[in-house]
Image (spheres, rainbow, N blue to C red):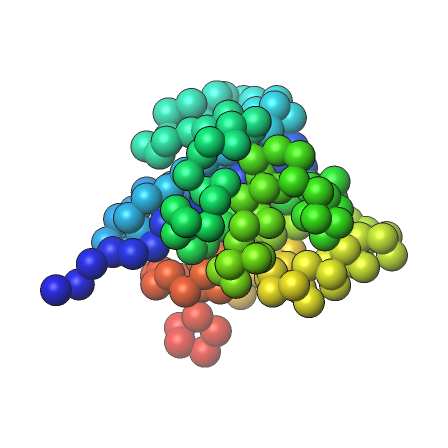
Length: 190
């Protein structure tokens, strides 16, 4: 008997790159054979940036339970809930800094802290350029603590034709890093 054990947290911050979050949420909705549960948390800035960049409020219609950014009673605020994968997509440098410093002042930073302390998958899809030395040192700190920095740097091997296809080159890589099986372009296989 094969049971689905993956419980996923998606946190969306106010960094530019809402298309990455949109594509990630769409792909997670299609992975119901591998994902038992998805919890979504968005900052206020994330909602503003989504509306500005994508011209809609479709984040209100995702098929996942959404939690308030200050809801410390959300299940993934504790390691006992056994959420085993967290994506921060896109991840702002402010969120990165708070996580690297161990500051759990909202649900996103608390859930990330839980992932690190429980030695579970934490994937930060950073979306900023260029990086300052402070950013690089914060990425180093998170990497040393067990997190994975997955810059939102798309690839072009698959010759993407739309913004969503371009974003999928990053999202598919992040899903791979999480250990989820996705149908994606593979170098040398096409």
